[in-house]
Image: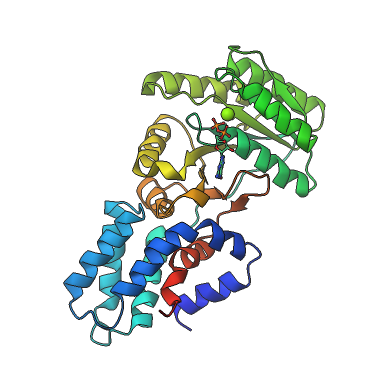
Length: 323
Ligand SMILES: Nc1nc2c(ncn2[C@@H]2O[C@H](COP(=O)(O)OP(=O)(O)O)[C@@H](O)[C@H]2O)c(=O)[nH]1
Ligand SMILES: [Mg+2]
C-alpha cells in the first residue's frame, strides 16, 4: 500500500474526517487542486515541476524554508522514479515528504498526578483565546472532568463578561477579577478555588497585549511563578493561540512568545476561513512546536484535536478529483 493510500485509510476511519475536510476546504481547493494540475502526466521537466510545487506550497503558507525542505525531501525520494512520472506516484512521494518534514508529534498534554491540572492560554488579542477556553471546557466536561475557568484578561473591556457568559452556558464556574486588576492575582484566586473545590482542569484565559519582549517576558514569568506557587508543577500546559489567517505574521508572533517563555503547544483558530492551512507545517518545522488543536468555527464543538494524517489528507484531497 502506498503512503497516500495509508493516510486515506486513516482518514476514512476517523470520526473527525468530515469536520477536517470542511475545515480545510479552502486550503484543499487551493493546494490540492494545484497539485492535481502540476502533477498531471504532461509535465516532463523536473525543475519546472519543483518550481511550481514551491509556489503552490508557499501560497498555502507553508513558508519558504519548510517548502524547500519538502521539495528536497521529495526530490531525494523521486530521483529513482522520476522517469515513471506517474501522477499517483508523485503524490505518494510528495505526501510522504510532507509527513517526514512534519516529524514526530513531540508533546502530550500533561495532567497533574494529584489535584488540579492548570492550562494557561496565551496569545494576542482577537486570536480566539476566550472562545477556545470555552471549547476546551466543553471537551473536558464531555470527558467527565470537573472544570473551572479563570478570567485573567483584565485589560480588554468586556473580556471578563465574555468568559462569564460561556461559563453560564456550560455550567462551568468562572473565577473573575475586576477590570485592570493584576492578572496574576486572579490566577492565584482561581488556583485556590480549584484546590478547594476538587477541580480537575483549570483553564486560564489571559490578556493578549502585543508588547515589547521584555514586558511580555516579565508578565508571563510572573503568571507562571504565581500559579506554580499555588499548585506544584503548574502551569502544566501553556498553549499559544494563533489565528490561522495571520499566516507568516502568526509565525513571528509564535517566535516572540517562544523566545520569551515556555510554550507547550499551539492552538490554531479560524482555519475555516483561510486557504493558508500550510501554516501547521511551518509552525512545526520552523519552531518545533506541535499543533494541539484546530478551531474550525465559532461554536462550542468546533475544536478538533490535531491529527497529522487527517490533516495531510484533507489539504490535498482535491488532487484525486478527476476533471
Ligand atoms: N470562524 C471562526 N471564528 C473564531 C474561531 N475562534 C474564535 N473565533 C472568533 O474570533 C473572534 C475573537 O475571539 P476571542 O475568543 O474573543 O479572541 P481573544 O481576544 O483572543 O479572546 C470572536 O468573534 C470568535 O467568535 C474559529 O475557530 N473560527
Ligand atoms: Mg479574550
